[in-house]
Amino acid sequence: MESKKIRIAVFASGSGSNAERFFEHFKQSSLAEIALVCTNRPDAYVLERAARHQLPGWVFTNQQLAQSREVLHKLQQEGIDLIVLAGFLRLIPDYLIQAYPNRIINIHPALLPKWGGKGMWGQHVHQAVVAAGELESGITIHYVDANYDEGDVIFQTSCPLEPGDTAEEVAAKVLRLEHYHYPRVVEELVRKMQQEKHL
Image (cartoon, rainbow, N blue to C red; front, side):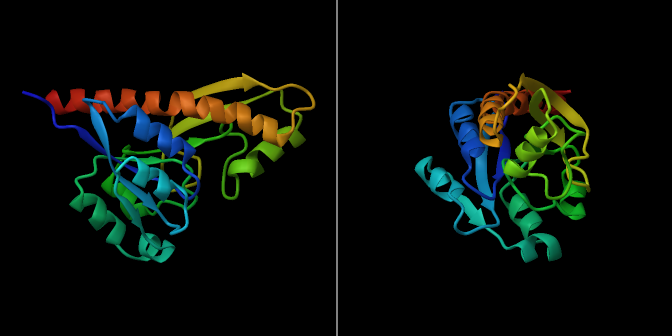
């Protein structure tokens, strides 16, 4: 009997270049499908990317996320099994973490535990790495818990930095790692979820 696909919701606040890698990666997958693309910004470019892939987009307000159960109700209604954050900049509230224990995944553009926490996203991270004279940076894929960037690490990989690299050059190196590894790591998690369902 064919397994029911794992249904993934992708959360993004901006352009959604990582989200698009997921759209492409899971398009032909027998294991999982991108079932919903969620954003807290009605002008987020990720919605255009989703529309191009004929994927449903849904916009909620920060208030709906933090102060009501509407986001959870929508995810349950859509039968979502796994939430993937792809440049989503709001703290995930406790009620969602409890509803999806070890089922919410985030990527951070640095080697945690360094350069994590509130306010450490995007260029802020790369600027801090350059200012510290680091010789490497990289990505951390981790489970989401109640604090920014503190959940259990699933996967890390690094890239060497050259003296004199600008924050933009570091960002480009790190983004290449994100685009390559993030869909593959999530696919591995999906594979495990499918196996657990059959145990």
